[in-house]
Length: 113
Length: 224
Image (cartoon, each protein chain N blue to C red):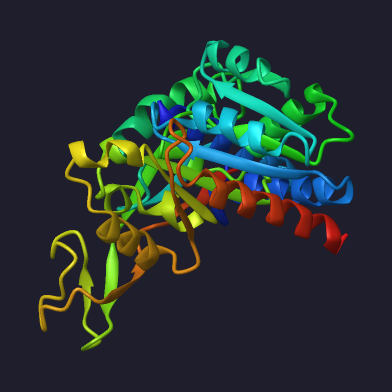
């Protein structure tokens, strides 16, 4: 269960940020998950209560935003969703592209007091 | 009603672990210890490759092994039989090791005069790729029965590895494994990756791998 271990890391990281910023109550935690980041948002939601139990995040709502897998074609410069287009440029049909987003996994923000 | 404010964090989920891994890498470099993080799917032959690697290098290098498993010590017993110092790390259900768990393992090894510590990571091609352990080099084993399409399926693992061992080449006639296609796919993701086709069972190709490892460990010591 790879999402649970990752969720524990996220909780620890957010606890540190909260300490540094003297935040004692967190209403919402917002994550950004890249489409190619190999984590499943549904499982992150499922694991969150277990990882947050007994921490400052215990009563926090988890929100997840998805980041699309975007690539830029090295032949014609078109930016396209690499998953929808099966790794092929929809304009010139080249498979030579560079990934510009979608691999990352970020803690975007917290809303707290 | 409480006033809530939005605090932008914009940190990668892996930021804390990456920083900790950099600290561990520096500590190890100062103590002249080379940490190799060895990863693969379950059953690719990590333990048997390690046994042969230790046999080839044990008179030249002082080697210790950290065995990471979810819950068993089968591999540790096999490694201990080679005479190398070994410690078993139980990850308690976690599918990878992070830098802090690695540091604790090294502490438990008490390996002050060790030249080379090999971390046998949990058998998995996904999570270990995402968590930097603090190793000086990363190596992975792909075995012939797993197929030549693994670089397409687990790109991150191939991107972060310095060395790729392609194991069980003695079985290649029985599988539809295209060696050239596999290497090409790996190099497309990682042009600098060193590739070592070998068979831990027959010993074929082992020398190129162990020579590379020996040279990399000693080059690292000379820089200090």
